[in-house]
Length: 281
Image 1: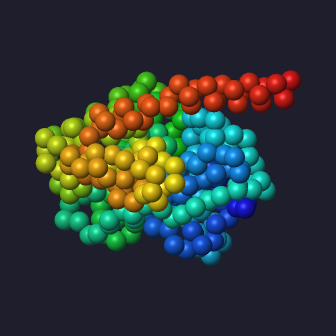
Image 2: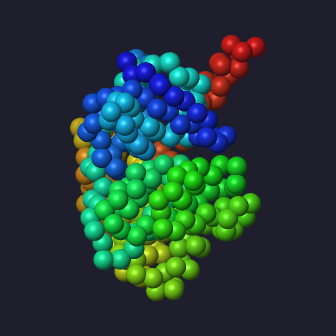
């Protein structure tokens, strides 16, 4: 069992959890993730590790409430325990000294995923530019954390309620058109956002990496559920990724696979919410 040390609702749909996991905290590197199972009969869900404190033996994750399990996790409090936390999983992000600027692009809770990567880039001396996109001002997260170390931070909102109105690609294209010396781009967020970013940067011939959020079960490469097509070949996001060259990813296929169980996920969530509502009544 893994104890929740701290739980904080950081916006209406995202919760921050600090969890006791000493071995994972010592081994984890930026870009890696864990698999949660809340209880013995629970499903397995992958969540990127946003931070770790090896001395305290804790990891920090940000969980967006989307389906039954993430909504259920949102009801947990400090002191509660999670049945299984497996990790660190996946390959660490390749981080090295660059000849140009490092741009990190995040959509929504993807900001938590790129945060440790951006920090390490800055730590080794790279110039870091962050573009963070959200639907509206009320769900902006981690802005202060990025501003504490990044060289430049730009916020976009779909409705224009904060920062620049528009999508992350609106802001990114302006920098690309200025001819900035961008050595590498990392985009993390909804699959459609990563696809659009990759389509945009392909024309500029700028290295663009993406962290794929394909469906996972065992996260060891055995089940094959997280398969994705990269460069015309099948890869498994859990063991070959989660990061891949965005210009080689078949995003159309990924988007179809991500929609495979939408109806079942909807039914499961509705049943859970109805049961919880009945208990509250």
